[in-house]
Length: 532
Image 1 (cartoon, one colour):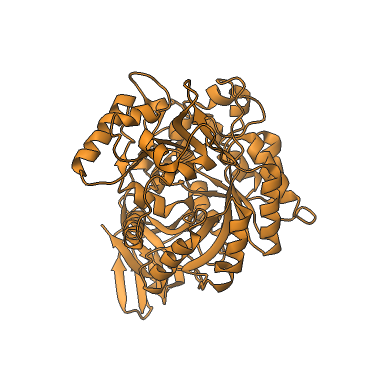
Image 2: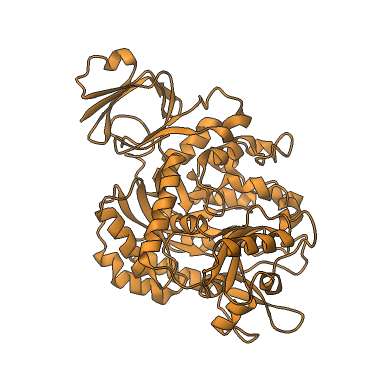
């Protein structure tokens, strides 16, 4: 099947546009002007009538299954107060009176405009129900709060401990329902596990939404801990049944080295992957938490919370042991690190496995938010890929300086500096922490502003990326993490025919309008998987 796309403004690669593409068997065969491709023998001609086309976008870090689950749970994003959370919970329960447990996600205490501006606790959730377990996760996913029923089901009391996590104790000496970092996994268990049919439904729902937003590839962390065999089976079934609409690469999380060893004896050996549509991927680790929850691991105490340094989800020794075992098995490691102490620890663990400062497995850092110039220079020297989320600035620009001080804030969220220095930079959303809409993400990278247009002039505007650089990071940069930069991320001969057609010319509109760009069509492997 030979398809000709013509009369388009096609971003073939950074600095290079063409008008037409010849596509055959899922690959770009030729790229050039309308005149250059006019004589080709084809089966189908698609006249784009001047539309702008980009290579398919590749989210370098998100959670597809968690996004699907969030789409089917109590949405707490609109909450502007604790009273709002209680109201939203009661309304959700009223609409679902037969539910046996209530999950929810999206609250952020820094957005509370009325009442107390604090973390919610079990007593707040008890006002929704004391009959069924309720678990409401903060938007970052690094804090989960359970009601009293949830704690009773799990048998949690003041003596319960979780390695690499905290269960907060209230003034009464009892757990107040707030769980952070590795302890979030514990409170989640109060919600009964979903059957495979529900998991598949949620995955497909999330996938359909993702391709409608312009994602043709995802690097997704959906395997989290001990139920990994069930999740891997689901993904293999979706692939073998031809249900995957995008290219999928794992980022599987094992904080416990014994779980990782079990993976190495099973899925790592027996799993079947074509390494084009369905790829094995990287070990994903968590070193710390989030800035908003003050669980990001910092070298110095938080400026707005003296005595608080954050949380280590893995000790340095635990991290090193996992990285060493991954290297022994030729597995790439990507690690969540937000605070500067976490970033330092991760770089140390990686460099300890390198020979002559080379990073052949392309071990990477997810988030890399709070950094010094020395750390950015070291990342460049070691060629450590960094998976940034510019959309985080939508919220974080309000709290960064309060949390870490002005001096450190100047060299943090340093997308442009690190890209220009020559370190491998890619973009993603960490959905469902943020929506997987890539144009809101690109908007933040280019404008250095929140979606509300503030701050005026941009947050440290010298860190604003150019539009072409941001698209390059979202395509070629993300493909680099997968060792696929020679076949993905460009619309040139020999590259896969993954592309998106836009509703407006992203290159000529006001940069403040980038967040409003919509996808008209999404093509993966030469076939349209979404049409608006």
